[in-house]
Length: 325
Ligand SMILES: [Zn+2]
Ligand SMILES: [Zn+2]
Image 1 (cartoon, rainbow, N blue to C red):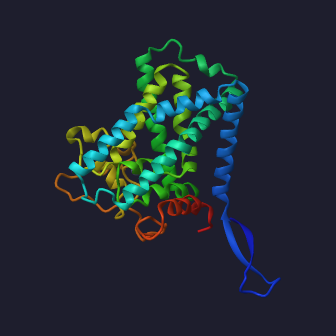
Image 2: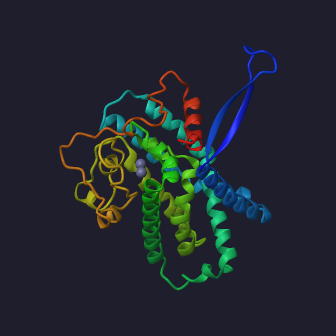
Image 3: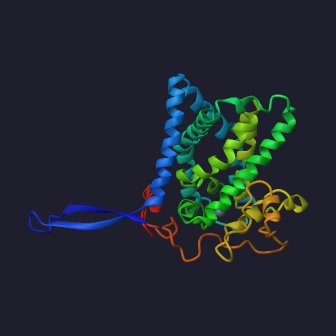
């Protein structure tokens, strides 16, 4: 299903008054995701503005998602990638620099978007069930709630990830993450901003429901961000026996493989969901690191557009899901 826009341009090379037309076909499902995301973000922003809490909420989002622990981990992994690389590359490999641009975009724009999505969904829940859900966990010990939250978050993210690989419109957004041919720690942040809608539906709502506004919630989210960032690092670590339970860089690299099935090793932190759905492919000791990216290079990447500036390639990648394929 497409909308058809007609772009009209006059050209100096043509006679005055002669109009050239070029049809730009728009992918409607991507527009629907944009509208749905905007609606939830607007719900969150307007509710926070009404309570004069917008500034504090955004500051809280940065404190959770760009916490010093996250930044320190990213920095440490950049060093580890040079010291123990799975694949040796130049210090300023084009893929690393490009994904660092995505990290800057993440810090500047995506974190506020995620924060407002979380508040927006929370407001929608309030409107649906009148806020009664906020007190249902009052008598449960905090440690049990924290464990349940991490499990629910990971199960929800696994389901969102599985959906992204099954539904064409969601894959159009997720493909950008998979198009990296030089996997690195910043690839964790190489994601289309609109790809977060599904994850927030399935992963953040359970967090809000279980933990609510308890002081431990931001800590849990920071820990989860760290655990989800680490597997993208360009290091060969498989974590030994622990790697059967926790997603390691070697395990997640197989998910990014440009060879074989894409729909395996979907786990973010725990491998259990992959094991239960028979989608786990554990790395074997001594195996060479697999090449990453999408076979056939269907998307423009920084490696295929070598002469172009990173910002131009990045903008092109963000617009790509809106063009009818
Ligand atoms: Zn994926
Ligand atoms: Zn990944």
